[in-house]
Every structure is written in structure tokens, then in C-alpha cells.
Image (tube, rainbow, N blue to C red):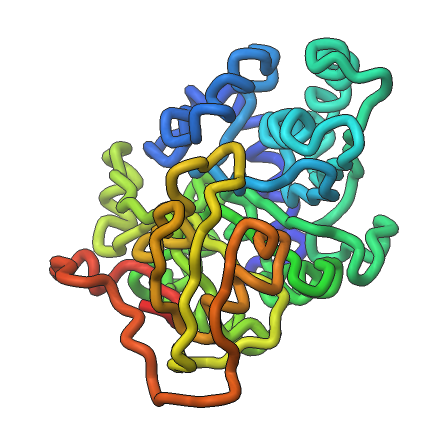
Length: 353
């Protein structure tokens, strides 16, 4: 049986010694940046090539509205996302990167001055801490101290995911946001595959079954999460496909909030208006894959959605009409006219789906 420590050491070895650049990855999960919003794609042009080469993420977990905020990146690796976030939060914001792999931390720290100068800052607004995402308290990250937590294809690598999510919701401020990309599976990964060092390092062995992910979040008090994007991974390596081809793996981006939400979408007759005031999204705001708010256009919303828009940092950008004094039953919060084929049925979804 592979122990907790053995799994951590296996991951450290894979990302510290086996992989030299993202070209060494065996599956097509690594995000090239094409899916980023235009402002982020512009920032990517200023990221040092060595940092980009050692980036191993699977998505684009960069939400809007970050100016002046404190952002925590779990499993920050070579620092690519942290440096993007450094630019987005501005000189008065703060970014903390946490990683356990010494080689990755060396790359990130060695390019701090480069990016500080590139962004025109008088001093760095970013720091990298060496440690484990399961134990943020030992790194001095206090309760209710972080506005946004991001992570890019890292939580699947943890041998204690419930501890990771508990820590996330401990450090988030009330109304704070978790916005992360990771790999989930359409069934439970068999134990012998979960302990395979290559499958673990390639973010497949540790992928949670989507229903176990939902249950885990509920156990730590998060009853509604939203899927922002979702794509099935291609197992392009023949050896990996032979081992794990019976499993559907999905690269998803998820957002969740530290809010007291209900476990179903309930109807209180509320309506949301997006004001178009987020600079990154002047014409429309995408909350999730089936909630897109056009500027100025009224849209009925469930109680949970109203809270996500009206009791978080997004509140100044929305006008929420109505409250929760009168209840009208369940809210039909599903995608309208969506083609729900077998692949869509197996893909991850939150409460509001």
C-alpha cells in the first residue's frame, strides 16, 4: 500500500526530476493559454520563457475583478499563474504561491525581480512559500485572510483532498471565491491505477470521481459549486490509454464561494442586472457554463446565484432586485435546450445545473 508520504514524494520526484518542461507531459491536459481572456493573453507575452516552459497546469483559473485583492495560488509550480495574478491585482494587491517542489520554487523565485521590473512595480507584490497545500496554517496563512484561492491542476495530486478543501474555506474571507482547474473522472479510479506513479504525476491517478467531489465539498460546507468550463481529456499516450482508457477524464474549471448557500436552487423571484463595469468583461459576465449575464439585461436567478453575485466582490457590478422573504419553490436553473448526450451526462456539474 502506498502511504501518504510516499505519494507526496512520488509527486515531488515527478515534477522535480522526471518532467523537465511541459513537453515531457504524456497527455494533452496542459493549457497553452489560448482559452484565457484577452487581457490575460496580453500578460502572458510578458512572462519569462523559462517560467512558461515549466508550467504544467490544465486550465485557466484566473477570474475577473482582482485589483487590490489578496490571491492564494495552491501548487504554484514555476509561478506562471502567480505572475499573471501579480499583474492583475496591481501594486496594491498581494499574491501568495504555495508549492512543495524545491526545483519549481527555485524557478519561480529566480524570476520575481524580472516580473517586478516588467510590470513597473517599485517592489514585489508576490511571495512563494514552501509547504503543503494540506497545511496552510503552518505557512502562516490565517483564517478569513484571502479574497481568492486559485489552483491549476494540483489538488488532484494531494493524498488528502478533503483537508485541502477544508483549508481553502478556512483561509477564504466570507464571500471569498475558490476558482480552480483540475482533472475529475466519470468513475472512481481503481486503487492500482491511483498508485501508479506515472498516472499520478500526469494528474489522472488522483482524479476524483465527480460525485465524490460533490460529496466532499458538501462535507466541508460548500453545497453549491459552478462549472465554468469542461473538456474531456484525450489520452494520447498509448501506454496510458491501455491502462486507463476505460475512464473518462475531464479538465474542468470550477468556482465556489464561502457563502451560506442552500443545497438546491430555490426560487425567491429575484432578478439580476449586470452593470457592465468589470473592465475585463464590459459586455457580459459569465458566472458558469449556463449563467451568462448580458450588460443591462434582466435575468431571473435562484437564491444561490443572487448570493454569488450580490454578497461577494462582484456585488458592485450587479443590481439584484428582490430578496428571500417570499419563496416560490425550486428554481429551474438548468441549461435551456442543452444537448445532454452521454458525455455531458458524465461530466461534472454543481447544484445549479
